[in-house]
Length: 462
Image 1 (spheres, rainbow, N blue to C red):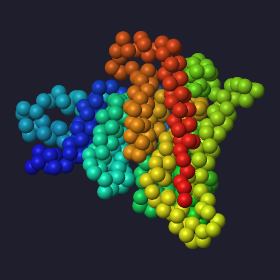
Image 2: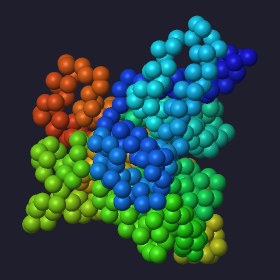
Image 3: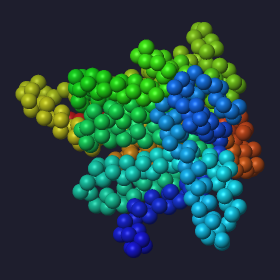
């Protein structure tokens, strides 16, 4: 029956193989950050939630104080007991079946096994992004021949992309989880018209990791354009309520309702990354200073700190990209036409696939610009633009080569910072400053090329 189901539904086979690939990598190794996830979860179970962000971590393997948002911490809290549950089940099987390998119990009790358990949320987020890509392809290509096969290919390009599974199932990072929530929030805006739910889902992304802020400017502008300023304010108030509620278990008292914002700003956002101009990312700053460990608060041109220059450059590109996006929607109809007819044309233009193409293009470019020009970027943030570039290829198949190229670049960037398994031949090349500069330059040139292509896109005509 299972084999027949797989033959009839190849999507399930692809998802199963993608999951199997990730499960097979869970136990090979894990990054230092997984210790954070383990220790924070253990501290919650042992000491409770109240005052969590003011307590020092109980182990030296973790950062001195927790620096992840509440939802990420709560996810770790939920998955931490799985090791104990699996251990109890294994003991019962061991007692009931003499042939059961008893030494497996010791492995289940190990920190390696616990680290594998803590990687599962990111693995599920990988599958979630693949599933969302499948749904979006079906929406955009409805009525077209072989649209389901294209959707399955899109799923494959996520699940078997080494940049994705290396980050989640081997390294154990959770960067893919906020990307999943952001993509889901855009899906709800574009196809379901459930703007309140979309706003709540985007808030969940921010409550997992602040990297979701990269997408926020375009999300807000697009939200207001499509659903009005009043609906945005309603969603903003409800989302802020959810934000505040998420912090309540972690507070010792409720005297100051602004305390959650203070914690997020000072203990999470400011402490999220190492304080250097670049933290291993093959981006613009590598071309300027390399991996020299310069703090981003140090003065640069005209005495302005690197951090501010990063904001200025990224902000310039964000404004340019959003302006171009709005122009694709807010083109002016001929004055001789009545206002009602003009509005119908605007709505018709927005509902077309070209509008979705422009949105995915804009989100991709903004995320790519943030990775290239903001300071304190980690190598794993190279994942931020990838799902949106993949969706862009639905209308621009020629861009698939750029998706593959950026995926390879992302994987090489990951491997450069965390070479597991270590292959001396590859690392000897990747550790060369010349190669690093070349890869960073490729990223920069590709961004400028794709940005120019985006800006050249013709406006709709009446």
